[in-house]
Image (cartoon, rainbow, N blue to C red; front, top):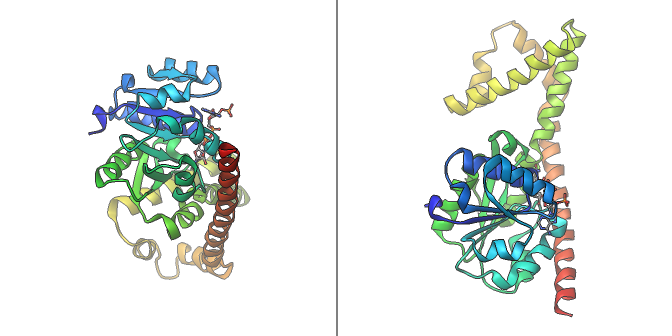
Length: 286
Ligand SMILES: NC(=O)c1ccc[n+]([C@@H]2O[C@H](COP(=O)([O-])OP(=O)(O)OC[C@H]3O[C@@H](n4cnc5c(N)ncnc54)[C@H](OP(=O)(O)O)[C@@H]3O)[C@@H](O)[C@H]2O)c1
């Protein structure tokens, strides 16, 4: 049960804040059981006054008293923070990283001990508790650990569980980078609305609400998108005229290519990150 656990969140930035908001707001965890760290006192003061959680500038102290440690710092400094906190990490704690692109194997090499490790890829919609999150587990994580991680990340949206190796990069390409694709689509639809005579404000509102409504319909009905598309497409009507234009412009292929390109870029960045981890590790052993 999550509400029995003490959780340390290292890094009180966008994601750290969203996690605290989700955990406290959903009552999954009492504020007194959450301790946040950051290098900026101003962020700690803000998160403490907003959510009544505990804070410290000392990562090692936070890790020492936690049952679950969530690393919510930037990928470039994850190795440093892992090495700093490694003396207090062991298999009594569940260790979760949300750093984009850092494989479980790199983290295991970095701390040089067996850990109950979980890697998570949320997205920016965590800020409004609608993140699409994928979760992958390391060799020593248990089924109970996976359940706890799902509980934590369900407080900021919805999660799925995946095997890491070949699929976390795909997640980064689809849902991790996906909000950017949708923002571009909404911006383009708003331009289109302006072109056909709507005000910018009305156009943007109608475009965004249409995306929200279509996504909600898909999630709530569980119908296939093709089926829903067929329902709103009458013979000789307006929707089919618009759809034919989208198909001739190659929207479907363009989106497939975009996700593939982002997935490949995630693999490249992951390889660079592994190299950084190896470098940080060798400095640590010097
Ligand atoms: N934001 C997203 O949409 C998103 C989506 C998926 C995954 N992620 C992952 O989530 C992680 C956090 O992203 P974010 O957007 O929340 O970044 P962020 O806003 O920069 O938050 C990270 C926080 O950690 C602080 N920090 C730096 N060094 C630290 C240290 N040694 N100990 C403790 N805290 C330290 C940073 O302070 P300074 O600002 O002073 O450096 C900052 O406040 C990243 O690894 C990212 O890849 C983010």
